[in-house]
Length: 276
Image 1 (cartoon, one colour):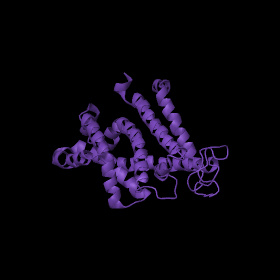
Image 2 (cartoon, helix red, strand yellow):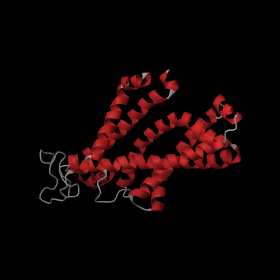
Image 3 (cartoon, one colour):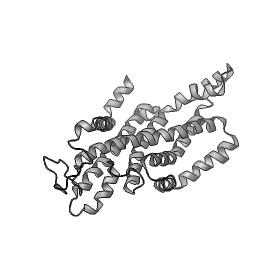
Image 4 (cartoon, helix red, strand yellow):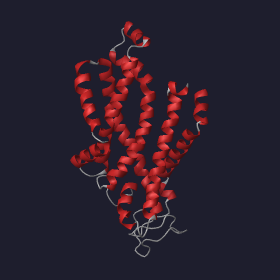
């Protein structure tokens, strides 16, 4: 209970939690919140400024920007969850095995591949993978997930290296526990804290990466509502309709901020050193 109280006393962590909860609720109830179909075009209402009828105004095709921002929350949630899930499913098992067994494959194969991936700026790597896999949301998530995986390999491996010599691990070995049981029942549960924190922070990067790829035409394809593609479509309208870029850009900023604040709050909650 003391841990929970400390988390709730952390104002920024609670603020991040509230932002993410609002994002989730917006994505779940988008059809009830949005006043219009996000893809409905009304050529009689092109580039209308924000008003009571259209809270965020309309774009160059007469579509309601507020409705498109609301539905864009669904893509952002999917991007955060899918990209991190792919990265975790690839990176954590590799980090567990290489950190536990060490040896040639750890030092000279896996870690050198990880170093090679991390030598490239992440967005360049994601762009290259997306170009190879092809445009589309699924391929973009796969590219982003592969790009994030080396980070989870390194973090998981570091945790395993610090835990593999703990007394409870030696005790499990002394009673004949198999390596699989030691890795997944004794080491992994004690390594979850940093992995969860990193996953939360990586979700923010996943949303930014998806928005960047969609902005460049390699992510979500029109007419599906995505904050990144909305920015791409509105960039030529900045001089006549700046609100068309303001609201999707603001949505990205707030949500990414929320995930970062939540990650900082979880660090205070899950990291023993941070709590001292």
